[in-house]
Length: 312
Image 1 (cartoon, rainbow, N blue to C red):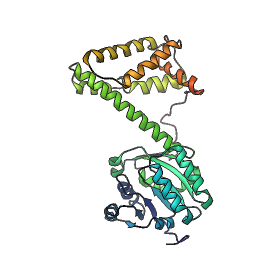
Image 2: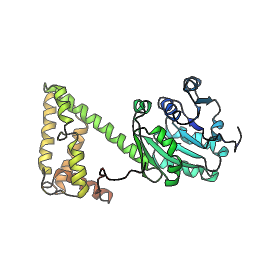
Image 3: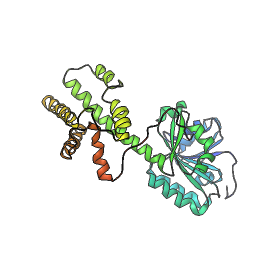
Image 4: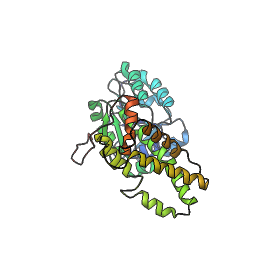
């Protein structure tokens, strides 16, 4: 297939791996799909999906008006686009769903600019199971017109919805933040359950406690962040010095039971710094002031409400 031989509404998909196969299946609910993967076995598996055909030539994807990337790492995305660029048509739209950095997506745009091709980022917030079940959520960044053009593809992939987070790279930035939180919280939760086991507590009771609206997992977001930090309201509430005391008790209990702590130990240092900065009588959400000082930018914001319109 040579340059300017378009496939009409057929969507190209590069990458048929663990996430790529369900991406192919979701795309095929609304589009004909041309899939490429370096591995023959993955192409064979994808070929079993109705409305999906496969190719062993990456260059064949250049004939598609829209090309979706579902690849393992930024280096592979960069290589794929560098190989495709000379063959792309003006107006070709690349949808990057692989998890990469915001700067990577902006680099892709610079790489493709001479060809007239465009790129948006559509980070997949959900996992493989959600994509397979049609309940995935997409975090999207890019030019509004490009995102509007990609709407049919985004609708097929984002069964639970999609939202524009901002300019190019914003979707990936949001995904990286989400993953950073998830992975750090996983360590904190593991420490918490190890401490609970060492104290003879029923772990099911601890899980039920933490998932409560007033539990230690949910309330820091819904109250400390979305109410106090958002409004820079640190008057009253639970004093930071009391929170530091409670943190010290957690460390002491873990030490007595021989439970190693890493994330909670690191968090204690933040409370020490906030105390030294004179925030002891403020609500403990005032730890945010440390990052405001270090970064030189306010962390205040207006939380979304049910009446706020989405971009999707």
